[in-house]
Image: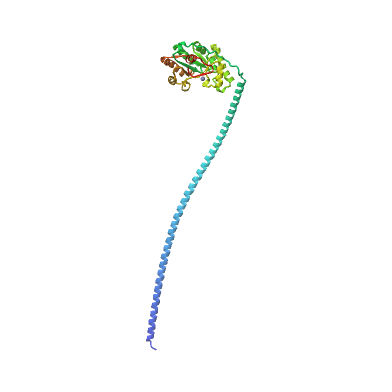
Length: 354
Ligand SMILES: [Zn+2]
C-alpha cells in the first residue's frame, strides 16, 4: 500500500477544501448578516426607546399643563361660587328690603285711606253745617254811598289796596298816607278785626275805605250761598261794630268768585273789587320787586293789589306813593276811583279797574 495520494485523492482534497471554503464564506456572510441584523435591531430598539422617552416627556409636559389648567379652572370655579354666594346674599337682602318697602307702602296707603275718609267726613259735616244755615238771610246789607267826584274829574287816579290785614306794620303805612294826603283802601279779614280795632277805626277816621275780605279768608267758590252769606256776613258785623256801618265794597279771598258770590254781593248791595296791577308782594317779599311790578303796571284808573302784612310791602308802598305823586297821580279810595272813572257803580258787578 502506498501513501502517495492518487489523483482522485487530490481531486477529493480539492473538493473538500472548496467545500470548506464555501462553508466558511457562507458562514462569514451569515455572520455578517447576523451582525448587521443585530446592529439594525439594536439601532431600531435604541431609536424606539428614545422616541418612547421623548413622547413620554411630551406627555408628562402636557399632563403638567393640564394639571395647571385644571388648578386654574378649580380656582376660577371657586371664585365664581363665592361671587354667586355674595350675589345670592345681596339678592336676599334686596328681597328683604323690598318686602319692608312694600310693608311701609301699605301702611302709608292705609294712612292715606284713613286721611281721605276723614277728609270726606269733614266735607260731609261742612256740607251738613252749610245746609243747616238759613238760606234767605243776607247779613250786612250795605248802603253804597254817593260820592262827589268834582275835585277828581280829569285827574290821573290810582287806588292802592291792602288785603289780609291789619298788621303791626299798618300804623306806619297810615302815618305815611296821612303825611302825604293820600287815600287807600283796606280789605280787612274779620277774624283779625278785633285785635286791630283801633287801626280799623283810624282808617275810617282818616278818610280811607274799609272793605270786607271775609271772616276767615276761605275760598268762597267752595261754599254754598248760605256759606258765602255767613262768611261775608260775620265779617261785616265785626267791621260794623268797629266803624259804625257795614263795609260797602268786598274783595274775595284769593280773588275767587263765582255766580253764587256775585249773587251774594248783589243781595248785600256791594260791588266785587278785583285789581289790575298785582305787585306779587306776598310772593317775593322784596321792596324792589314791589316797586318794579307797580311802576311797570300802573296807569290812570289802576287798582293795585298789595298786602299790609309785610314790612317790605309797607316800605315799598311809601316810596311808591312819593313816586306816583311826582308823576302827577292822585291817590284815591276804590269807591272814589269807580265814581270818577265809571260813574254809576253796579251792585254785584266785578270791577278790575276804574
Ligand atoms: Zn286775601
